[in-house]
Length: 328
Image (cartoon, rainbow, N blue to C red):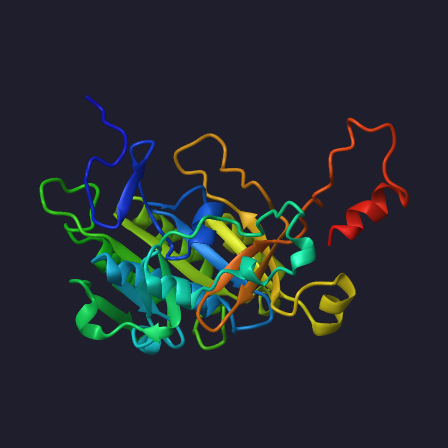
């Protein structure tokens, strides 16, 4: 009898529609994905014209694996130092959580406290990590962490395929206790990688290998340094893709955005591996904020909280627009 889904149980993974999924390590990003990243998915983070922010999501991704006993294989510029900068986990209900991420609601001026407050958070905080506090190696919970020194797509692919073919990661070989592998790829398309013309083949073969394994991939690119044809190919070969587009200071002021806002968080593609339609997030106009201890994805434009005038004959003086603005 033909069985669909992933019948195995692996620590740090959950089931959705009978298929495995696992957290990216960032609750906001998980919410945009519909709860978590599906098994076998290739997720690409495009940090446009910068290398300041995508690395943070790779640290979250790898640390989530280290805390759950997943194996992590890293390749690309800086991969040898990635495991020295994995953030420590902070449990959602702990006192450390409250001190590390203070309640911003306490800072609201008294005159605005009667106005209905709408959260700008994308997702409810679950497990979070403190970017200012790195994980010690003895705390790796049985994870095997390794990196590929070669900065060549062909050589890197061969080593990743060799890992994915092992019985402990294979979906095709039954019987053995299964482990989960996270592949971290930094700065794909960078001149530091050799043989750029092999990148499309690298991604296509990697994606195919993942489809037969218990594994997920997160990679970073800079689309500002990649030709459009190659970027279209990368997008087509990814299962999920997001873009981090920094906002310049003058643009931030013109839009009236908070000084904490570092850029736009754009959804390019969402995974659709086991469903006919991809998950639809509640909001798609998003920004991101990088703080010393955490990385947050926020809703950009929230509808103003208007008072209910349905029982009155006319709105207050000044018109509805000014009434809405006064709430801010």
